[in-house]
Image (cartoon, rainbow, N blue to C red; front, side):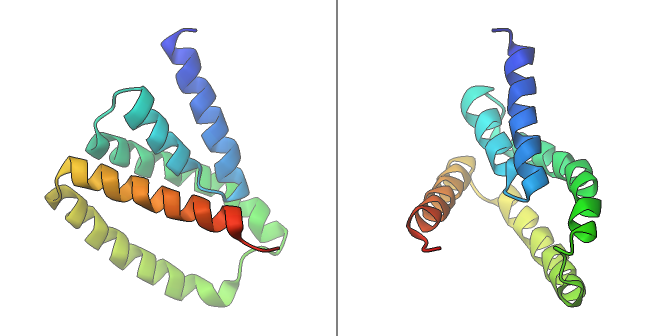
Amino acid sequence: MTDWLIAALAGAAAGVLSGFGAGGGSLLLIYMTSFAGVPQALAQGINLLYFLPTAAAALPAHFKNGCVEKKALLPAISAGLIFSALAAWAATALDVELLRRCFGGFLILIGLRELFRKG
């Protein structure tokens, strides 16, 4: 399989997951860093740029279906902006290997939580 086809399939899978609100960017980060050889910091930047149009494409459907809690928007957006800025600053200051390990540990914890979550 050619490299562009694998990248397109990874992007398609990430897009489907993003449409469901299930963290397609995480899949994209794993693909880029583990399989495509993209450095972690560059993959994070690409992931941020990937998130904007996919979120914009999925948002109207979520609004239409009543899946957006309007009262939570301002606090969530405010906290998201503040903490994403802090995390971006921290990510540039951390060693790349430590960052990869932290992200891997985070994914394992989330995976275990989902695996053993009841109903």
